Image (cartoon, rainbow, N blue to C red; front, side, top):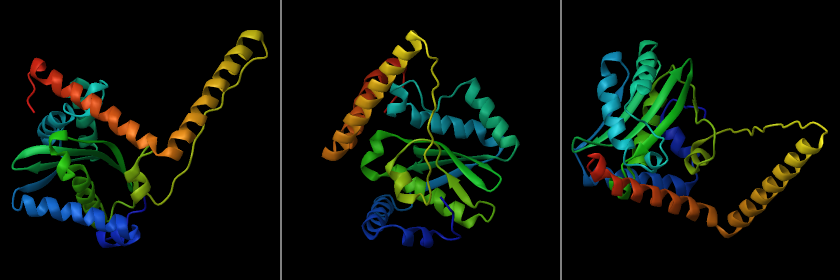
Length: 236
């Protein structure tokens, strides 16, 4: 995404319906929790401890945690954050409501590009669209920073990338198989499976089932995380 120099330019580039929806979500949160909302962006090495603690407390409630992924407070995360902070790359943004961390967004600023690495929100705050709110507030910060010219969303497809992105490209893997019986068999099986995947993806996209499956899948993992929380000492 090419970063303009003011957030108004971003909103003007959105479809009218999307622009109105985003504005309504932001205003709803700000009216309900007036004076209780705070967005903190951690960048320094001495801020890593608080940044990791806040973001990990959010991530443990997300469906990513059910997959064994997400942002985890461990030695690897601490080392990565420390190195990023030492080089001036770190931009960890956390949304607090009533002093409770409810959404985080981890970005790394390298050169003129802001790389979006991870984001997440506590499902307890899902009703208030805290992830959307934080993303737009971070975007507002990036617009005001003359050192940042583009935002790189990274791999994968997501609705917010389609909404805000200004350019995209596709990448593909190339497989080469030897002309022997076993490799040819593997190639045939792989081609068949990939063809089935393309077919079912096309069908589900036509009937609008892909988004439903994704939401249901995420909800199941979030429910699993909530069920496991008491045993691991976590609180909702």
